[in-house]
Length: 109
Length: 118
Image 1: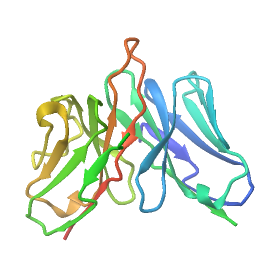
Image 2: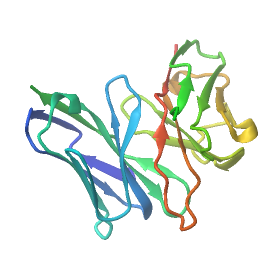
Image 3: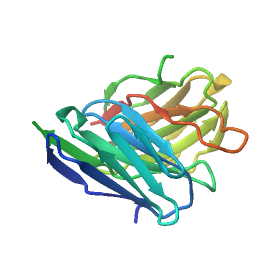
Image 4: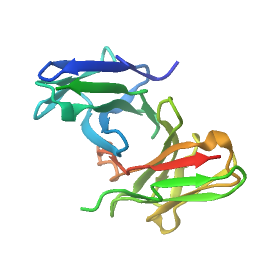
C-alpha cells in the first residue's frame, strides 16, 4: 500500500466547475506538497503546507493533520488547469518524500 | 533565478549501455533529490544529497545506479549497464537548507529526463 493515496485517479470537468482532489497519507509528515505536471512538461510546486490552508488565485489547499488528509480545490476551472496533480509528503523521521500516483484532470471547454 | 535544469531531456539507449543524467540545482540549494517515475506508477524517491554528501540513498534500486555530487553543485546519475526496467522519467529537485526550526523549504523540480532503454 502506498504511503500517499490520491483520489480520484482521473477527473473530467466542464469549464467553470469547482474541482476537489483529495490526498490521504499514512506517515508522520513535516510538510505536504501539491505539485502540478502538464503533459510533457516538468513538475511545478503549487503549495507547501504543514497546517491550515493556503490560497493562490483560484487554487486552495487545505490540510488536516489529525486526519492525515489534504484537499486541493480549484474554483472556476479552466482548460489550462488540465494537468496531473500530485500530492507529496515529506516524512518527519527523515528526508524521504512519498508521492501519490497523481490525479489526471481534464477540463473541457 | 534560474530553475533546476536537467540534461538531456530525452535519452534512448540500448540495453547494456551506459547513460549519465545531469542535474543542475538552483544556485545555493544544499538539498538535491533524485526521483524517478516508471510507466504508470507513482514517483519514487531515489536519493538525497546535502551539499556533496549522500544523506539518504535508500531508494536506489541496485548497484547499477551511481549518483555523485562533487563539489556540492551539480549532480550526475549514472546507470551502468542499463536494463529495460530502468526506462522512465528521472526527476531532480532541489531545495534550500531547512530553517533553524526545521521548517521545510519548497521543492523546485527540473523538467525531467525521459530515459528509454530498448
